Figure 1 (cartoon, rainbow, N blue to C red):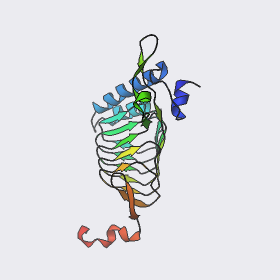
Figure 2: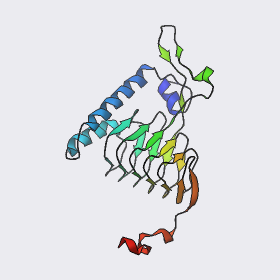
Figure 3: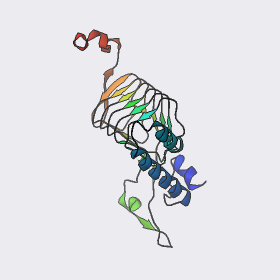
Figure 4: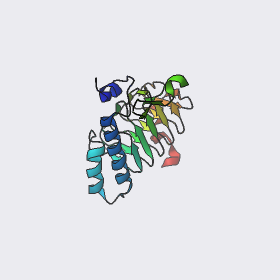
Length: 205
């Protein structure tokens, strides 16, 4: 297996591999280029995203700034929105469904490091190149989810369709569909039902 294949399969891999370094540098440059554009430069933004996040549906809008580790390993469905400071560390595949909204300062982090420092610390190859042992776990977010501000989603998590993740949550375990979940660690509070419809909140109209 190549180091890229190992990485995407969730196995221990060498992040200093030339192919991976090249992909990361490209994504980091494209992220910075995107961050230097504004809302009224739609054509320029689209051109950058076509390279940075090519696997995305129509209507995706990223406010910026954005930060992608690779970008090409992230899939986004139609009509997704991300507010300021959207960060995706996609060392393993990140799958985002349709109509998923992210508040500001949200992070999706698939990388995992060994717990034991003896395995986690920097090592050196014979040529002096520094490296560490890393692996990752994929993240999947179902369609029609709302991820509120300052949420961190850890590797290996699946968030079910139609769920809402409360502000400041740290999601370390799977969240079932149509759930309201909050906290650190994030836990399900209750299901989202018809009673949550805004039509029952007279103060909004």
